[in-house]
Image (cartoon, rainbow, N blue to C red):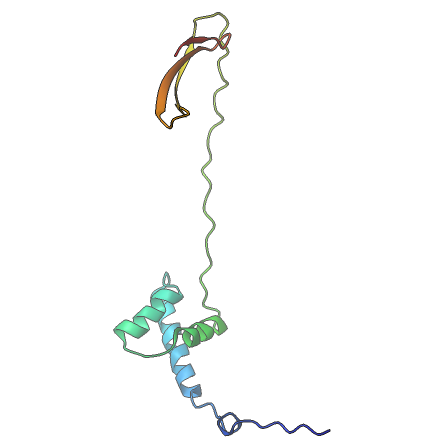
Length: 129
């Protein structure tokens, strides 16, 4: 059994015609990244499209941008170095330090309410709600 497959004529006769334009795109990208070192691909592409008026596809420009290895290095963020926190003070007698906090809850019929709770830190006794 013989299978005959046909290729469309447009695919068979296709020739790339844009090699000169690729060199032009590469030239523009190199000049832009030398003059403006902080510009990444997005700014370079927008400059070429909106300011210079070139109608190149962003995928094509990005492919050339990557081939030229012009990608900017993403700098890692510096972590803040913080001092060690103070050791928590443990109260030695009752009524020396208190803690307060608001709490919220909901009744069975859907009404909400809030309470202010006051606690003694020594024995964790609820002094008032």
